[in-house]
Image (cartoon, rainbow, N blue to C red):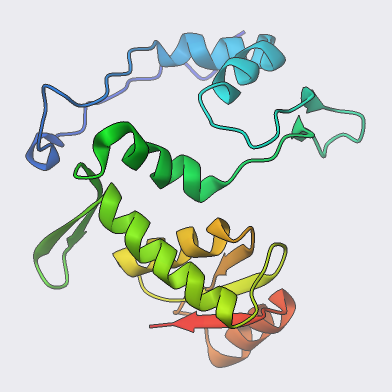
Length: 191
């Protein structure tokens, strides 16, 4: 029984950010129906969602609840998040399409970054991280503001199979030190 009442979805005015409105990817779905289905038939819904991604190794099971509440998703599957977020779009001919829009209220500027630019910059940074010995499973702390370069650092890290941890710059020195020490990073990227 729905005790929270109706949910109203309001449109977001993003037309000013869309370069090719007629060509943009269209997704049409009823959010509430998708939500209900994901609760009632999670394996079916998330199995379909998983098919949207490119997998290096396909999963053998959509979900494993044998150790609740710690559900394991896409058991046995392996993918590269950077490939899925960037590379496959470049390979599909969308390298010149805008992938990221940074609208800075501080500088009153809007900066657009294409999939191709993200791929190039993430690849270069991933190469630099690899030269510093970063490999799959290592941890990289990102101590950076909300700028496109932070996203590039995230993508570069996951391109290598490493784990990124973004540390909020507003913490006091002691809390910041605790979080960085806890992560035990191989590298810290700061801006």
